[in-house]
Length: 298
Image (tube, rainbow, N blue to C red; front, side):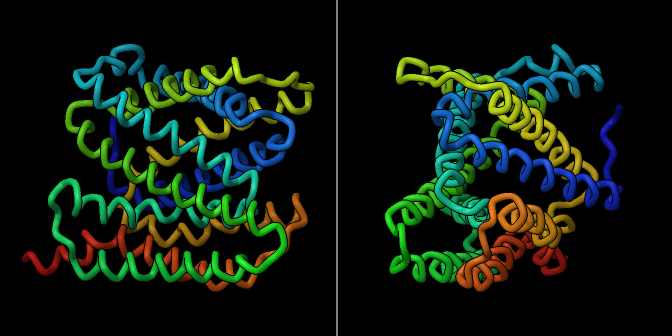
């Protein structure tokens, strides 16, 4: 199948599907978080994510030629940052509602925009400054009210881990921006999942627990959902511009909200409701920057 661009409806539908699959992955991770060590969860999630990714590559007749690489160190850096981000993200979702952990992940586009200025010499535009201000305000609105609440230590640690995961993800995406000039999307995805699985396996000496069949099923599903979500997101970005997909970040957060309400019985906090438009507004502005500046260059 050849790459096809200019199909916004297909891109939007795939973005919505990726959000649903990503939420399914996070729900599975949260459900097993009290029974399975973090490293063991990361291992299962990454190992079984290989199945849909390899199946997709075979369907596109890209396997194994797409795995050839000229940037092994670039893959190692991207995969190391991504693996650290996954550990931090899963640790955060174990301590926070799924919706709040997902909202904190929206810091990545803004952190990536700022990182482009600091590391790649890009211009620090008004759009990036405004996006950063919106996101920082949103994070403050989310976190500060919880500092005086019950179980404050666990929630604050969860927020810190969620923010760390977003920053590490931004670093991984900046690395992707550099190596994607010579590397295929398939190779980037494959080596990331492989390195992350090995990182999870490295925690085996720390002690893994025995896994009952229902828990094993959730671990397998977390990997299948995660791999399928990555494929859907990759195709969405291939079919439609990032700026066109950005508004649907709001829609994608419906699924984590419903998961918290219906599956885990966790009501939405006032801080989350106030932070939601600020954080997503900043993320959308960061994504829209290139589209908004385009007319100025003409």
